[in-house]
Image (cartoon, rainbow, N blue to C red; front, side, top):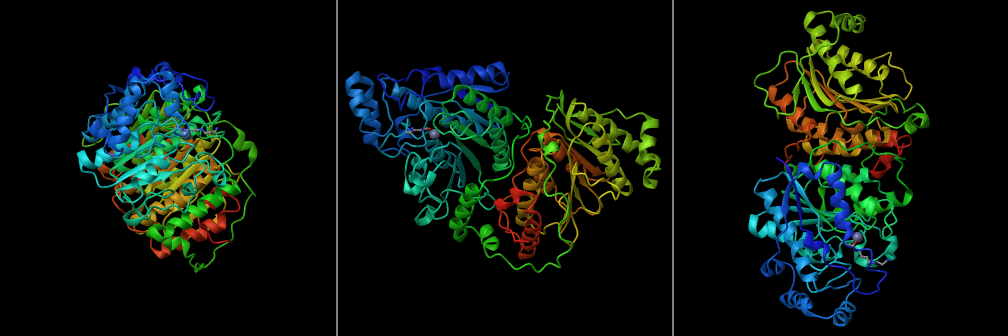
Length: 633
Ligand code: Q9C
Ligand code: ZN
């Protein structure tokens, strides 16, 4: 459906007219550097380009007072001295005669983006704007921000499009106190911000930027730091500041450009993929340009490049997450069960043994990340005519050589039958295409009776032909291949049955949760932390016999696993799966948003208990699990 890029070069006009070290970082080159890089990468050409329009004064009035709008309008005719004097009345603001025009274009760009997404002209998009918006308040400019672009867009989405639930995610390094103030009593706009705080010693130095600010009145629980699994937004707006990126002089944080690809991808599973990002901060031109490219590339559906570096959360991050969780728990059912810390009623099972941590030599090896010519290939045994696929998804005809296929099949009785052998040949051909970097992701099918053996071959083939670390997520009755080496190169995660058990840090089994809420917790609280910690360069996800997974759950799982291994994900289905299931998985692996889950039920106490038990068992080895509540082993 496409990605919009909203811009107008007039927004480069506003600039600093006098000496002010605080304001000089917010300069016109921010926009030109980002745009040039998008062009260089061929990303601009893939977008629908929209020329920003000015927001009307009525539209500005959705969140600003008429007096304030007049005040800004009148700056157009002021001289330099008067502009400087007026600027001094605000914190970190430098007016220019073009400020009013630019700020109206910035707000208008956000409105156009929302209109384009909500009328279905595009799926998502980015507005490249100056001045930024999230610090601006009803009657005040603040922190380079004049009109609150994202807040105006949110109010407009409610008023003109009749939406009832809008999620605003603010990943700028600063707290967007302007957005918080404007919507703190409004439960229809969930404002989530992460920001540098330093216990109040980081700009804007506000007590109300802390985790215990949770909104007020009707809006209690709709401000600050939340998981998103009960809100089910209809639209996601992003206050996309890149001053949290590495190299930024203002934020001094360490987020690599790839982080923004992952953040974007995580948000794309919400609201049917309707994501509108609007530029806020970001003052290191190189880092800004790269991060903008990562965001746009992900909006366009390209898989996120793997994250690099240590996946161990630091103590202070854990404390921040814990205090936000505690502050929000009274307002969100999904957090309450976990807060109560149910006792470990599970029959224990063998205590997790294995290496103290993943071998560091493996973690240090860079993952290959070429840009494959085919994003997604479908290798079903009998090409299915009822399969509805986007034009760029390839139906693979090829098969591996007969002798080779037979050699791999030989140890397995269940692979002796002709149909199983034919399916294996297609799978091996697809897998080789992925390992060679020609194909990014794919789907293969196998007769149910041969599912376990086919998966076994796929794992061995993957490990012997280029994958350094292989993650296998197996649903249903599939056992870990018994003679698979315990060398830390494969992580086996089985979701089925009744028992939760961590047989080693690389061999985990968990029950399939009964309801959507439990399934979400399982993915967010177990599968993803393990997967991101492991940093695989190949992911196999197998829906085996009796997997019991609904299509939309399978789609969500595939969409989330696509964040790993640069999107190098191979899904293995049973031959008699429905064409709908194959179709939806192919589209999701190809970068389409999974269908919205709807406002989900919370996890059952049993599901929560199983998850907490496993996290307790595994948390000493997989440190990322510490971000979630767990029972201490
Ligand atoms: N050096 C935005 O990122 N200066 N605004 C802080 C500490 C103000 C940031 C002073 C920063 C404003 C949109
Ligand atoms: Zn900022």
